[in-house]
Length: 380
Ligand SMILES: C[S@@+](CC[C@H](N)C(=O)[O-])C[C@H]1O[C@@H](n2cnc3c(N)ncnc32)[C@H](O)[C@@H]1O
Image 1 (cartoon, rainbow, N blue to C red):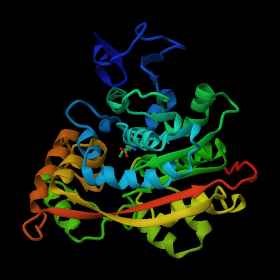
Image 2: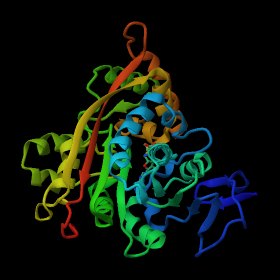
Image 3: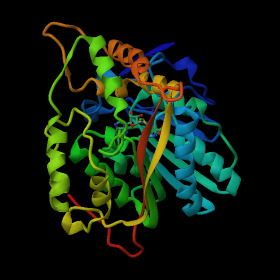
């Protein structure tokens, strides 16, 4: 049975479930179950326009290969161990994962919880239909732990939690891994962060990491890769994105100004300084932040092997972003498939070191805690 969905062609028979087929709980929603885990597919409604339609994942082009890269997994696993592993309560934890993609956090989280004998529940929110179905299908159902996969965006996280754990429900911990930079525009980043912080218990922790900040690509060989891809595409690089120009200035000015920064074009990836994310989380409410306390801030270099580079280019949102500052002659039709192919082919232009093609990528990791007894932030 091929269902009509926002993603076009999803074969629902691929989804393993038990009990009745889809259970419609409200219009347009379908619920699937597998052991302790549930998958709630629902229309994104007005939020659909905040997601890039060109970058939807599908059978051919998706995040699975990169998500399985050992170095990427390990970097994330270590951070989850230091945060969720250390701070989530042993009995009845509730962990919220926003932008969960193909399920890395919940899968690593389950492994860590099992090792430590923790029992509880994960709620994973993810807008991309292919990714969330993949996450549901590839996550085991284990005793004492349940996972609720909910299709949706970070901006509506409070409504999602109202439905999953009730309007007064709070979570012990939350994560936004390799995803905050994908939430478009400063306003959407702020509303997502506000929603998460509002529903975090006092003393609860939030983990974020990103390899799309101003520190991420320090190796000049990134330029060779990009140049090779543009050359193959026949396009022309346009001058540095407005966001970057503004940010160079913003980085030097008062913290408040950084937070006041507005994306001039929120359809593009804003490469923000790590400081932006730290300030947003930690400044007091009256200065535009969410008053969280830092537990850990660190930069971590992760090697992208040749196969990891190939894997990341098959993630449509990556290759779309790769060409965001490239213009093509009027009338030229360029598909996401073309961008993926050019970005992948150009990997061979990256100068090898000791005969090996690899590029270091600098991640920024942050763990913050909601102060015990803090008033609930409501920063606009
Ligand atoms: C690079 S993937 C990372 C996935 C996963 N966290 C991991 O580390 O494997 C980023 C994810 O953010 C999701 N995303 C994009 N916009 C979002 C939004 N507004 N709210 C929540 N997630 C979003 C994308 O669909 C994608 O699955």
